[in-house]
Length: 41
Image (cartoon, rainbow, N blue to C red; front, side, top):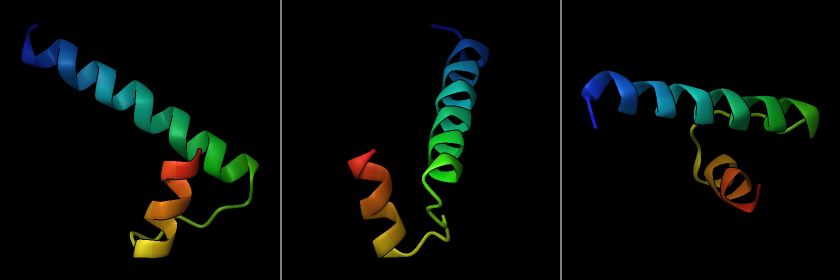
């Protein structure tokens, strides 16, 4: 897989996670607690 393809997948997934977090009013601040909430999504 080319690096650009991998980066595209990462970008797509991160956009998805940020969208879900926003939908569920989860503040993503890189704290341990917010990482746990992302893992639950």
